[in-house]
Amino acid sequence: MKFIARKSLLAIAAGLTLASSAFAQTASSVTLYGRLDLAMESSNDGALSKTMLQNYASRFGLKGDRSFNSDLSGIFQVESAFSPEDGKAQNQAGNSGFLASRNSFVGLKSNSKGTILVGNHDTPLKALDGGGLASLLWAQGDAMEVIIHGKGTKTSGSNFDNVHTRQTNNMVYISPKFSDFVVKASYSPDELQTATTNQPLYSVSGEWNNGTYNIGLAIQKKDVADKAFGMSATKLTMGTKMGDFTAGLAFSALDNNAALAANSRKTNNALVVLGYTMGATVFKFNYGMSGESASNARDDLTMTSVEVGYALDKQTTVYGNYAQIKNKVNAKGTFTGSDNFPAVSIAGNDPSALSLGIRYNF
Image (cartoon, rainbow, N blue to C red; front, side, top):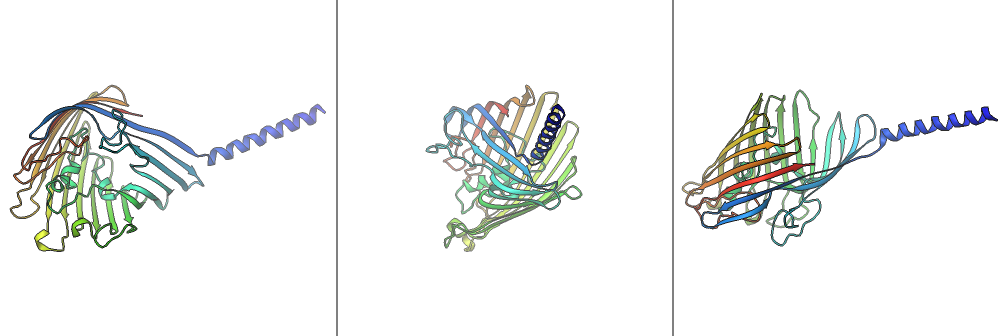
């Protein structure tokens, strides 16, 4: 009897071990992550000064994966913006917050064939940033959206839109990495199409990155948008990391493809970004130039930013940042920042912002 009982116990233990092993191979993995980034900011829109507590793209999210076999996994992510100091999303008046406002998707990932995502997701053009080296600065300092993606020209009111696009209803493909080269492509269908708005949007990029040097090219096109024009963009980025020094470059050509020649607007834009790490202290600088949208439009602008950060540990950094935009007489270039200030209301005014903040990643 004892022998039989022992055999039964051994069989049960072996069965549980095998079951646990099988479960471990297929169990879902879910991660909670996020960022809190708040700063005291002294801002000036060229006419009025304010001191505010600002939120800079704080977010929280859930992401996970489940392996079906050695090559194929199911993946998901739900990421939401929020503003810790006032309980709103992205500090915008009347916006009480909503889920999945940032990159949120479900998809399949194959190590050999690539990844397919569907949901709310950055276009390949937006995501191209020189391996992170052409978009280093925080607070109001990052010039990628203002200069390279065209927000500075858009705010001047010249039949122009920016191409900084986190696209809803988006389908994205990301290739496997071959010889340090990755291709991304996205397509957003025309489910909200009217005669002049919400036509399909196409975006594709290719990037080579060997860890020390990288270079990437992206193209994006939306057929027709508001005011009967549709933005297209070509973007080139380069970056290098050599010891404690980093450098990034970005260039873009933006075109509104207006049906009427009188409404045609095009810009050529450039950005240089430098970084240097000295122990726990990081120094950052960027300078960008956005050209006139048409001959004698006089809506060109420049943006200069400097930043110093000190890492208390791997998750927490305190930093100071100063940024300024110089607008030509017809330009209303403004920052990407929060609370809708300093949003330039008078053409030719030059906004500035001094921020002292803390960023915590979890």
